[in-house]
Image (cartoon, rainbow, N blue to C red; front, side, top):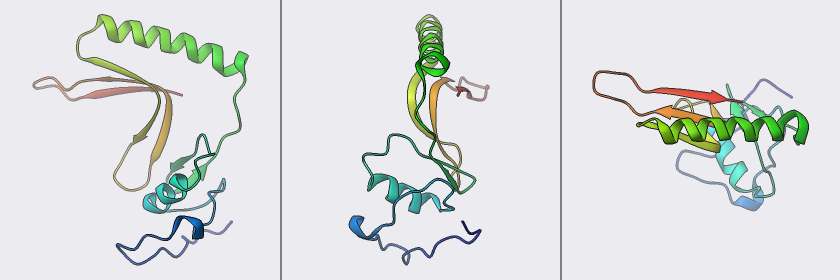
Length: 125
C-alpha cells in the first residue's frame, strides 16, 4: 500500500467499468474513484471510505452482531414511530462530508431540523 493517490481519469472522464481495478481493503482513493469502483463490483456487500482509505470489513456473526443489531433497530424504530420528526434507517450509506467520508451505517436515526434548532443524527455502528 502506498500513501499516494492513484492517478484518476481527467475531469469529466469516467473509466469503462471493465477497466477499473477492484476495490481492496486499504486502498487510498478519492470519493468519486471509490464510488466508481464500488458500482463496478455488485458482489461487494459493504465497503466504506473513511478519510480516503477503503475499509472492507469481514462478514458479521449472529451472536456478536446480528442479534444486537436487530434489538437496536427495534428500539430505534419504536422511538421514531412514537417521536414526531425522528427518522430511522437500516444499513444505509451516508455521506458525512462532501469529499472524503462515505460510511455505511448499520443503524441510523436523525431528527429533522426544527425552526431555530440544528438537525442532529445518531449513528450506531
